[in-house]
Amino acid sequence: MERFVVRPAAPLAGNVEIQGAKNSALKLMAAALLTTGTTRLQAVPDITDVQFMCEVLTAIGAEVGREDDGELVIVTPEVLTPIAPYELVEKMRASFVVLGPLLARHGSARVSLPGGDDFGHRPIDMHLRALTELGATFTTEHGYVEGHCERLVGKEIELEFPSHTATDNVLMAAVTARGSTVIENAAREPEVQDLAEMLTEMGAKISGAGTSRIEIEGVDELHPVSHRTIPDRIEAATFLAAVGLAGGTVTLDGARAEHMDMLLEKLVAMGMEIERIEGGIRASSSDRLRAVDVATLPYPGVATDYKPLLVTMLTVASGVAIASENVFTGRFGYIDELRRMGADITIEGHHAIVRGIDRLSGAPVRARDIRAGAALVLAGLVADGYTEVSGVEHIDRGYEHFVRKLGSLGVDIRCVQGGPRERY
Ligand code: EPU
Image (cartoon, rainbow, N blue to C red; front, side, top):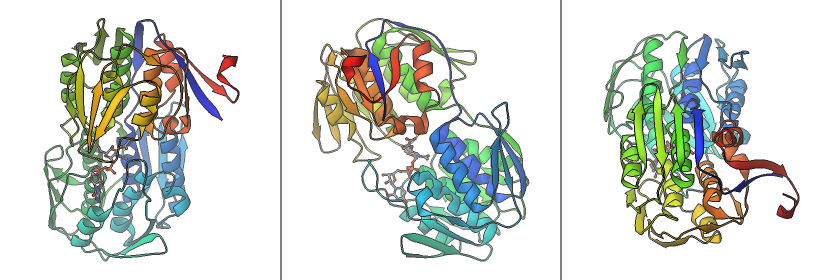
């Protein structure tokens, strides 16, 4: 069993190249199902979630491979097998995003219902309601959603909440629907804009992506394209949090500050220096962080994915802060692990009250999801002794070369197999 072993670091220094965005790449891959032929995607990160999506596309009938330069090549045939089986969807709920393109392209889809996860209950009702409005009919039995339609028909749809993947699913379903579709209260995430940009390159007619009203004029056919994934703002945030905790100066090559405005404001309020430079972000930290309240919200608010990182920073900041979770109200699983490291955190409803202490205390802890795993590794930067993070397969789902990248900035981290801590 692999674990990451971390020790407190001297101030960090150096440059780190930001990977392509996981939550963009997975949807761009699904979009390849909307056309026949060869789609080429650049900057798709080499992470386990991408491997899972490759397996889903392969099960559906596409051929997927990587070129020597890392480019992901997806060859979509004329005839698809429109089934996303349980074994694959269970590994990665984001694979549910093939539902929209399969209905649009094939007129039917059989996709396993995603289960619950560490964030608590995660329904898919908004996806199904919106696709039903476009003319699809659904039955759910034996753990599968089965959808059918003739050609979908455009409609004005209002989402109850600006769900990220529900917006992706409806967008991909609507691009070849008959007539026009409007998505009101659409998600505004940069990754939704990236998907809309690729669909537009493929021949779709979309306006308003990045705002809460997206308009789509259906076209008869799309063609395959070559597209570059935007940089991963959550990976960038992870390295920013590392600098905030360990101190030092790090340049994030490729990071897009304009995708992270609210987070950068919070980090400055906590005492970090953030410089927007040509082609990236430079971040420095030299003093103890200050406590600042944070509340997660859909984009452009502070992303829920940043919160485990921010809470970890607050555990050693001066003062008391309230971190409120407004997107996934059950997303507090990592807090017990931080408490095992000595953090002073009280949960009240969907608020975490974090009282900063001087240092955490290194301990064996378990990662239960991608971002919580990364946050626990970073906690090790300010924890006396060794911090051993198990469950690293969760971190590998979202972070490319995590250990190598942190190591290159001066973090004392290694990946070990089995055996007690005393060996290291
Ligand atoms: N919701 C519903 N019904 C639905 C869909 C969503 O009630 O049909 C609720 C959810 O339960 C949640 C809220 O709406 O309370 C927002 O969820 P959303 O649908 O926006 O989340 P998601 O699309 O499933 C994506 C990212 C997550 C990220 C969230 C929030 C992908 C593959 N996943 O999930 O990323 O936390 O948006 O920004 O894009 C990660 O990268 O580790 C990750 C979990």
